[in-house]
Length: 431
Image (cartoon, rainbow, N blue to C red):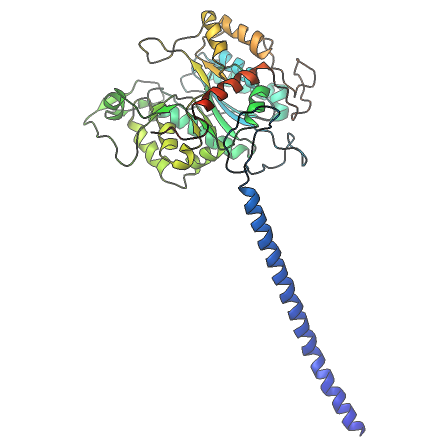
């Protein structure tokens, strides 16, 4: 009898361990299924919110800007908090040549804001002493060294404005900006002869309500005489292989117009979204590379490369406004370079409501008028903004998130409202 009981007990013990294993596997299977179900549900919810529209603050303006997706949240930085929306940031290229050091330095000060990124470049034609002086100023300036958002292209590029080297220099700056920081939303290329007509707080205030996929590129498909004089001739730019600047020269035979893509032309000065810049630089599609090779032999390629890219890719064409946010005055008939703005152009400059203007001569009196009337900036100082810890002196950074837009924001808003009336902010004009 005792043997029978002990045998039964041993049999029960043999089944206990497999039973425990089986129970554990069942619990694990149920937990995994529940986790996958929750994850799937969260993914579905996120996909729903991803397509919710994003609108301007109704208290700021009644103007509706088209946006189809909520922009992704950038990495945390001093200008953001978990409870506050991210502030739009700009990445600038300010380029110059021989004799442009002081002019470039003044433009940098007028444009400066601690949440932005800046790359400055004096081309290979400028003396080494000028380039060394610019590098020294950036390194020794207390604000630039503390914030670390001003960077110089030390290994200077040769830039010949009628050839492709200006495009190459712009792409070089874009690549460096992508590498240096994830915290910018728009790229803006300017020259030392450009100057802002609004403060950075004005620009940030207005752009905070815009779709961050929006681009500002002036373009047209009506090349007219440019088909014969620019698109069909083949040119070679000595700046691609010489260390001294020389004019482009023509080679034979001429080429036919392309059939794989449509040509566009426009202003060399642009405001490009980070998404578009990544598309051009990282090149997951081959079109930017093909067009870069095509425009290598094209007269004044900076006036066609970016325009042809955005207008041949529907994703970017529908997000591109046909305006460069500049005021530029051309002589009649137009010359190679625009009319140099002076004190006589003050009224037209102010009435343009643009964010930038060009072309200015070094220390022209009209720049002092812009500083006083539009930027409230004193000579040798930064343009005041909400970030300044000491009111208008701006010697130290206070709260970089504090934005104090002035009258310039209303002027720029008026320009965007005018563009919106023509449908420029809501539909593609690439025709």
